[in-house]
Length: 326
Image (cartoon, rainbow, N blue to C red; front, side, top):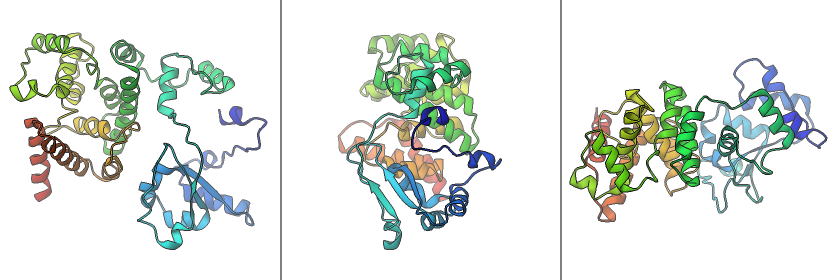
């Protein structure tokens, strides 16, 4: 697809990473390019959001010595935190002054999966190749059909982002990747559903809201979502239902899949709240640390606004802080 996209352009597509035949690290590619082009200056372009985790990359200091890092902003007004770098290292980092093109690979895969018009977002020849090879068919089309009928465009995009993020976290921490994809895609299935319809499915499942829940409409959808999926026999797997049921409030004793979806909902690619960079960094290191931070963040936010805190969120926080004390 790269060769099709760049055919006849000034760019050259290289297969050296594929030809390596094993796990490929950026530093290895740069070492090889340095041998091929010993007299040239190398510039490595990344998304500016990657700077927050760059110091966790394999041989990151050597990467900086081999190439200038050119960080392209993914969103308007993005200000990267460079405090982890020394003065000399900062000289090797170039912040590209380019107008960000705010579209993600997650959005494009969703467009392809739903067979929607991609407009000018995908080269027509590349799109033809994708369709001829039936790429990006992840087997979730039936679930996408369900959420497409129930969610607005913003929430659909968010669901795709959470699905992809949950899959990545599942792979990192050893959870079931396929279940993570499904739970992430379906977690907000009732988010745009009127209160009366949510109550119908809750009562059908024998679930009755407590006063603290009735006063906080934002948590209804996690319970009604699980009830809807189970009563309509869309999902029967208890792990997936649990991940949907607790993705907003969290709870004490969460399963690994529940933790994965809970954090994916906080750090998916579309999220842009003030602390999202911190949570993404924590999530790359420890799910429990990220959950502890987000539970505390949620409680502080609700208390400062004089809003009720769901008991499950308090239990989640207490569970995490007790684990930290062990």
